[in-house]
Amino acid sequence: MSFPDLWGRLRTRFLALPPKTRLILCGVAGAGAIWWVLTPGLDSRLLKLERAHYPNGRRFVIGYNNVTDFSGCLHGSIHYPGVDGWREPFSNPYEVDWFPDSGLTASTGHAFLFSGWPQGQAVPELEQSLVDYGIISRTSVPITRDTRDEAGHRVIRHETMTFFLAKAWDQRLAFCTNYAVGGYRPSPGSGGIERNGKYIPSRLSDQPIPEDPKVTVPRQAQWATSQVSGFVVTDTPVRVANAVRRVSEDGEVFYTATVYMRRKIPKWMQTPVFRSAYHGSAAIDPDRLHPVETAFHTVDGKLQWVDERPRMTPGDPE
Image (cartoon, rainbow, N blue to C red; front, side, top):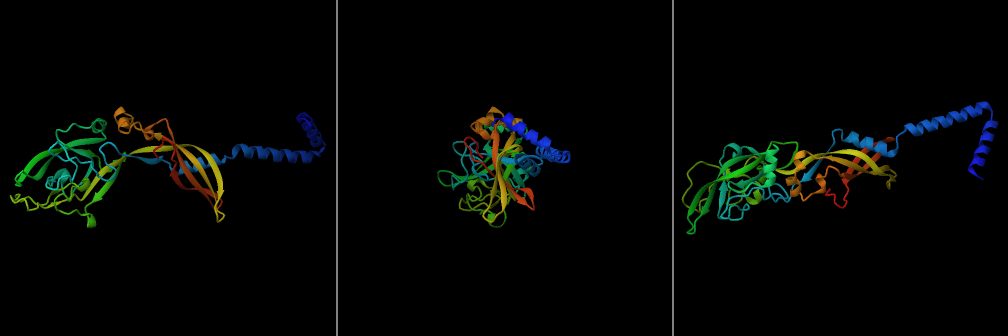
């Protein structure tokens, strides 16, 4: 039977019904059409929940790596002076470095560091770019090196370090913080504070430095030292796909979906220098949508945002 014949037969039967019955059927059909048009689909409902969960956008931290060579708190971020111009912390147990117990390096202070380099060392391009954009600033601080000559005699050298500093708890940056309290208080022994660059050592006393190289100069760490560990960007949910209704083993109904985020990348992160430091990472691509797997549970008949996890896709570092 063709569609015109089927339509004609249904129309004939409909017209044969009593007027009141026809009116009721028309009302039911009309209400169903209105409900279908006005009721949001599952994707729209989940997107609404996602946006409600992140009213100001989703805070995402892009990890900082392959720039000043650290993968955690202050690991290798302070490059101390050495014979060849710089050295990694704790590389020579016969050399001990310390800073003045005042100003930026006061033991009661809290420094927020990006990196530190010996004065005269070429300023890395990334640091210079971030200084130009006002993200970090630079300052010079004297450093004292307690070392030995070839005969083993104590030699005290005074040099200068250039620190690149961040603003305290700058919302554009993420920090990793070490506190010199309890079990974290470093040993005043040779090299103990500089190990892995976790602390900025300062002199514990202004007493003259003894000539005997076997005498350890007492030092102490700052109350707290924070290192920039990443850069903060904002993700905005733009669409939902692959929404699936699921039932757990205990009968709980929940949904999973892929939420695609649009990443807002500030201008200072779109520079060639920054992109080069990240080797063109997809994490700082403003035109890329970043997928996140999100779960929604039904509680008392209402959908609620529950949890999320980054979706690992080729080219996406999340």
